[in-house]
Every structure is written in C-alpha cells, then in structure tokens.
Image 1 (cartoon, rainbow, N blue to C red):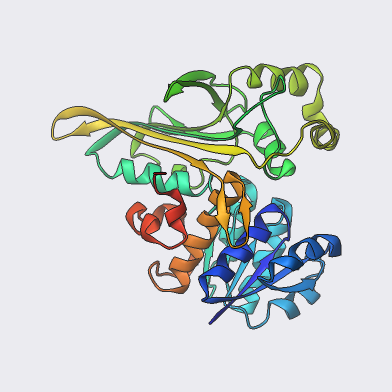
Image 2: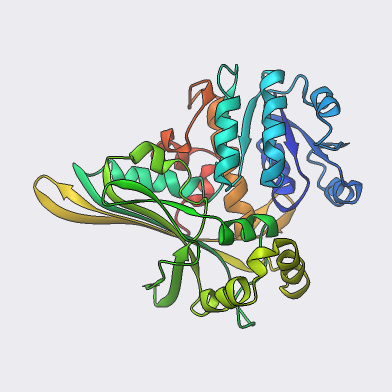
Length: 360
C-alpha cells in the first residue's frame, strides 16, 4: 500500500483524503497547522491526522519521511517550501496551484529529483489543459485553442451571481495577476478581467474574461505551434462589470487582504455548484478548416459517507488521478512533468478521472 501525505485539511485536502482512502490502495496522512480543521476531518476516518506547521521545514521533513507522494492543497505561496521537502524526501510531488511564478520555482526544484513533480494538476490549471491538448493533437495545424472554465452556483441570488466555492486566495490571485496567452504565434501577457466575451451552452448564457494561471504550462508546450491560445474564467453575465468596479474603481486590487476579508464575510459558501468546462480548437485537417470542442458540466456527488461539491470533486479528482497514474506507472517519468503529457483517454479511464465522464 502506497503512503501519501496530504497537506492542508481544507475543502480540497479533506475530500482528497477520503477519495484516496475509499480506493483501498493508499494509506493517507492528513496534516494541517489548524487543529480545529483536523477535528472536522476526524469523523471521515480516512487518514492519520497530524498537526504540523508546513512553514516549519524541519518538522515537515520528519512528517514527510517514508511517504511515496506529497500532495499540497495549501495556498500557493506555501508550495515552494513543500516542494523542497518532497525533493529531499525522495517523494513525488503534486499540487493544485494556479500561480505561475510558484510553478516556475517548483520546476527548478524538481531538477534531479527522484520522484515526479507535477504542479497544477487540479481543474484549471489541470484537467482543462489535458482536454485542450487532446483537441490540439487532432489537427495538422491549429489556428486557435480556447480554454474556458467556471465554478458557478447553480442558483445565484446576489448581484455578483457568485458564491465562494474554493480558495479565496486563489480566486483573488487569478483576478489580479497577468495572464499568459499566445497571439499571432507569439507568447504574450494580457491583463486580467479583459478579453470579455459571451457564449451559450445548453441554453444558458455565460460570460468569460481573462484570468491568471488557468492555462497551466500549455503556452510552454505549444509555443510556436498555434496561432492563438487563451484561457478565460466563466461566470454568469454581470460578474465582470462589478469586479472591475471593486478592483479598479475602488482600488481593492491594491489591497488584496481587504478584498479577501470582504469576500469571505459577504459571499456565502455553497455546495450547490456546477463546473462548466469548455475547450475549443479550430485548425486544418486533411486540407479542410475544421472545429472541434470538448464540453462538460459536472455536479457534486457522494463519495464515501457524504456529499461533496462539484469544485471539490473536480479539483480532487484531477489531483488524485494524476498522482495515481504516476504511482501505478501509467504515467512514467521523474522530475518535472507537465499535466499535458497525460493523455485524455488515460485520464478518463482512471478510477479518479472517471468523475469527469459525461453525466448520465
């Protein structure tokens, strides 16, 4: 039985522990500095619970010793130190960060590592890049590759038409930081909240706009191979306009901690959410201009004894599936591995990746 250390006992760390425990093939240790959060996870009976401050690298090294893999569900700014510990422990490393600079630092740390290092393997970045790369491979030449993902409340009631469903730090990070893209065959950075568009899926209208991090490493992999590539976050119409008032007109973009406080005290959490995934490619195949897309809507489901939200299921499934593929040998390699190296067919066939299969 493989030993896995999950760091962070929040929304994602908890379900990751349950998901791995339910498989019957993993012995899980769940660690967090917050004892109250560990107490919340205790009734699951899915993991050995350990209270540890992940910023204390010496103590973390002791806890990490003997584990085959370390999965970080911690805020992005803690992951560089965690990756160093994983490398020294000889363990494989996985996270769900959306932060570009953190991922670049982890790539450097992974050089010469005994285990595989796979950052950004949640939903977006993560699964959306796997789906988009699968579309890319179906063409002789790709003109445009578009990635769109949203975690949305099923029944929005406020003017933002939004509820908190995941890390507030990660949410604000993607709203404020520059975004990677490819335009006219060249890599560029574009501004967050720009590139506004609207589209409809199954009769429901959505808006989308630039946000940071969701493209993962696709710009590295497809640089010079596509004319245009971009990632945008999906919301219900009206969200972006209010965000621009808050971030630009009221200058909350210069005070992210205040913005976080306002969001967490004003926007209720919900487990009644839906994940909207849309990837689209236009290109040439056999001399013809063609278009193909990948569309999924994912709702929450029951795993183990309780129900989980859609964002919890998709983020944890992406993380667990890639880790499972590495530890079972389906995905081979040491050091830095891009999630785009995972084939969509292998991912969807995985016992954890199956949560992305079409809903019946």
